[in-house]
Length: 377
Ligand code: AMP
Image (tube, rainbow, N blue to C red):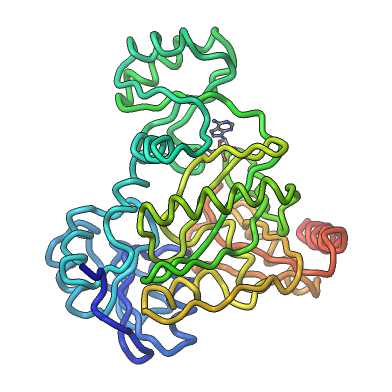
């Protein structure tokens, strides 16, 4: 059964579930093209509502609100993976959810995600699923350290996980598993580089890849993305092939991201996101088409644009604690494309925006970043 009604053209309406920054950048891309936007989010004046035609302020699983969103929209998309599956199924049955429900079911659950990767014989860290403390203690008998225990659902930006440095941490892992019940224990990969493979797939199975991004995290939150990633061609090809296999298996439509670890020529798949990704924001200025525009094209049934990297780039997130400095720097520096997401409260560690730098070389980019950082102080 086709997952979508038909071609959706500018002038028609795109519904977005979730009012955060990813939805906002999707909405901005769509509005450039001339689409109307309606957003479902419980928080009034959310980042998407500031650039949308209409907001439905209700819970994501509110059946009336989901019906209203579906009725008002010619096509619906989501900006985060924890969409209520019953709601998604309703919209899919109305043939207005080209991304489908299946990628949500997989990416909402680390067990299903890793099991699918294992079934496809893709390289992943060794793992064990545990449902209580006793099972965690048993599983850790066969793991070497370091290892990591993560909740199977609901974790993000390092929340819901704990690194296990040595056998001395077993009791903490047992307590963690007892508290969170459904958990995954993984072997710790001593990677050289963390990367993300971001691609967009259309409704006939055509796929376009963005250049692989190299990611640095601070306190488990993405700090900087650099493109091109400093990995070998062989590792890059393995990463693209693995992503293609998963995309076909899940029949992905839209922009999708897979995070991986690279150790020399070897890759390990970590986790997936069925939506545009923080590490793909650089595409707005550094590529001929952004991850957001390409996503809108895919869900609206338009042909995908062949992707070109226009210049090397680096993207740095602006967290709550950085926002004041960025506003201070802005009148003093020429470089850096600043994006603020319109969030009212600048809480510590909250993603408030990002800045992208482009130049001929990474060395020049790093010099621009230094000048920007100095102006922030
Ligand atoms: P995740 O929520 O799975 O993306 O994990 C957050 C971050 O923790 C990753 O971006 C890695 O930096 C680190 N991490 C998670 N799992 C592993 C692992 N098995 N080996 C090494 N680092 C990991």
